[in-house]
Length: 323
Image (cartoon, rainbow, N blue to C red):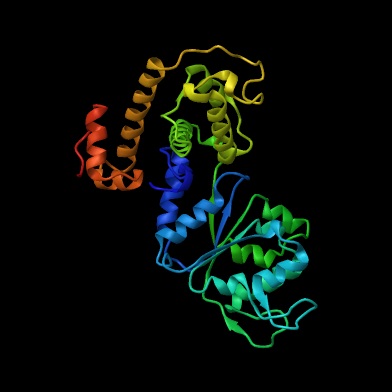
């Protein structure tokens, strides 16, 4: 499955559930709430829902509630008219209005101030809004997708989040598991990021020593996929032209004992990588009920590209299936 940065690839059950849900909701107009820890790729999932759905030709507009000061956020979301407040020298179109018939993505919605929560609730209920200082109402056509790393139920109990807005936003919930719960996908992500960052740096394909992979697999990744991306980029810079990532190239968090000198790269890891690719293909085929066309689409490959990989890695069909 093609995606920016490779976050949306994998063969785990958790990943399969997300894919299946995305297919079901991509053309719906109902609000979607994406929940998960920081760094799990919530905005990427929102973009993928938009791109795969019937609104793909319309804008995708994103705003992070925690990145804009409270006193500016209302104007950013809803826009304003000239003279609405000091410094409003001209009319301004808000981000919700900019989304048009596309998708409006509200990231970190748990940080939205209570007064704006009431206004957002009205937008979702009435499908209309007003710019700051304006009496005219404007029709809202955009689909709303929001995301948070907070437990909104606890925020409601604490009085920091409106209960009525919470239930309006959570009509459809996409629960994104942390990287530590996607162990089946870890090597897939590691290889994808290693290849893409090496290409971006104009480097030959990178390899990871067996011990470096062991250390990375044992780590808890509290920063999730974003932390993995940063770690791989750092390791590629430190490993230099050698192109082999060893324990000494990993950050102290991953290699607290300062291990070094691991040279078990090259052939042994190449064999492990080949075996991993074989298992990856087998799992993808099983998940798609051995339908090769569907498997190729999910993995972001052409059918001929998939056939070449199956032949190269000697993947035989475990039972009869559909082409």
